[in-house]
Length: 231
Ligand SMILES: C[S@@+](CC[C@H](N)C(=O)[O-])C[C@H]1O[C@@H](n2cnc3c(N)ncnc32)[C@H](O)[C@@H]1O
Image (cartoon, rainbow, N blue to C red; front, side, top):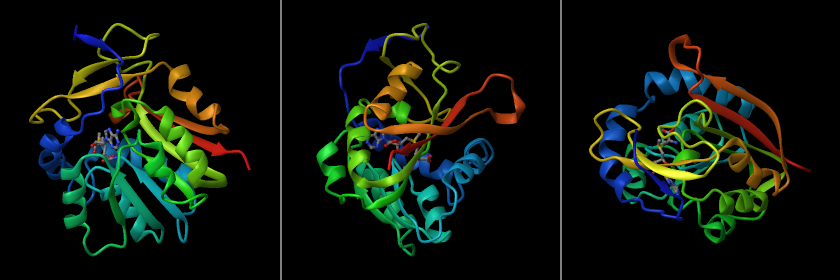
């Protein structure tokens, strides 16, 4: 059993900076097989039409999903708090129209400054479990999404995938997103209540979800949710 820690608002991009090259090599231009089979088709289905939409990609990593949305005709802004990830994404996707920014998902003011009601859609793939505090993000999304806008997010399934024995109490623990990554990073476990309440409190309603798993296993590893901002 791994050591678990109380949530203490740690937000440290250094481990992601150290893992950025490894992550980029694993994801490449087209993401890895896990992403392509377990995440991408469901996220695209829940996002719906993409052409001419203004989309915010939160915690974008090496930007491969952001670039896909760009190729599908969206106007994409993407951010990550790891300077190294953004450096890599900017270089890899230099010929795209994606605007890559360094920004912490816990920085409500900086996200809000992107523009009131600027985006019709927001997305975040496999990152909410890596973000120390999701309450500022929920508040910021209420400001930057248009009324009726959607936020599709993908996170590690909190009921089936947590590496400690605590479910009810929010806590963090060290783990690996990819086997063999240079350093471990912190995961932040939240119950379904703690995961979803910040969005309910900011006017979002859930209208669709998927629970998916790699290679047809019976225990879902991934939770994919579409939250709609009340119009
Ligand atoms: C598992 S990776 C997923 C990257 C990308 N979304 C994908 O699906 O390939 C998690 C990403 O979340 C970023 N991240 C973690 N905490 C963050 C925060 N507070 N603000 C912004 N990005 C964060 C990390 O730097 C990392 O790039």
